[in-house]
Image (cartoon, rainbow, N blue to C red):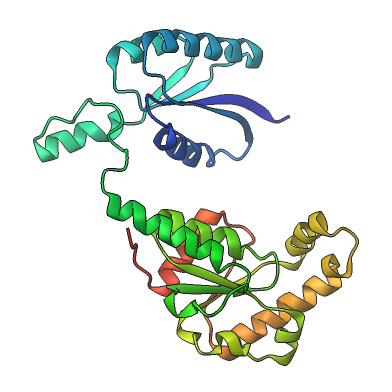
Length: 272
């Protein structure tokens, strides 16, 4: 029987921090099914009381205390939320205390300190995102000279989401190019990417996972058949080895982990 628990990510801001850390922690408990809900902009006592009601309803339905990850800085609001039937984790408390002692500086209690204040970093990320969108799926190759990395791989191996994550999180200009059946049968890099060998990074995937993904797009097609997926994966990995192109298997990794592996193996540095 699968254990079910509810988790709330509560913040007086966007909730991105509480959600990111909370989800990372909950992912360690693979045998529990979590219903996750983010509650941003809880910035008044009135809203806090509404949150308490929502938490208590979940507690009655689940017959167990919901988990609450919060980044609320206002003590009055936190005290109200603390009256709920929940297990609360103050995301900031674990880190701010030790930092305060080390830096000998009182942390700010102002709400929204994580907002973007440096436009240069923001602009770099937007530029990188636009680049990823405009250079997706081999649609345009004439701007590959501007790329920090060019992800290559068979169709549906995870190139596009990895490119967008690299852009959004690291400001990396990532293009991607799909290797077709003709490309891998020739066992030669296509002319349009051959001149950018030092920027190439390969993605591969287990054939059964690839077939499952492709069947969602084109069910019962040759494109999604196990025979075709086996053939393409085998040939593309042979190409990577022959051309000495670094690559990683995306099957068991999240997009965050894939992007991190690309960064490490390619020696890329955060741009913003």
